[in-house]
Length: 63
Image (cartoon, rainbow, N blue to C red; front, top):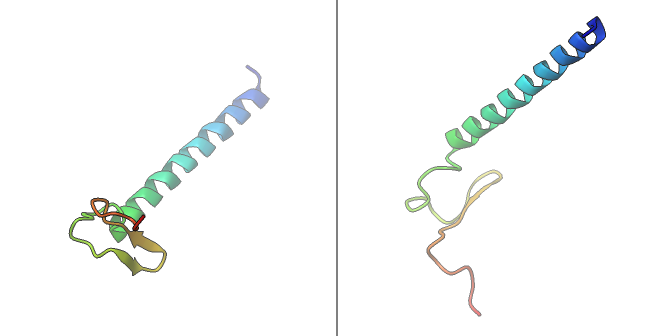
């Protein structure tokens, strides 16, 4: 492996770590906002800007 390959490998590893940290941070942020909380006790509809919960045990609409 020459120096160019090693530098590229370090960049790829760094990029993968950055993406993994971003995904983990986004997941924790959504969990903190309650997007993955207890949907049974949450009101159906809009509960915040950009977040909507749905009661999964109720029908979506009439047929």
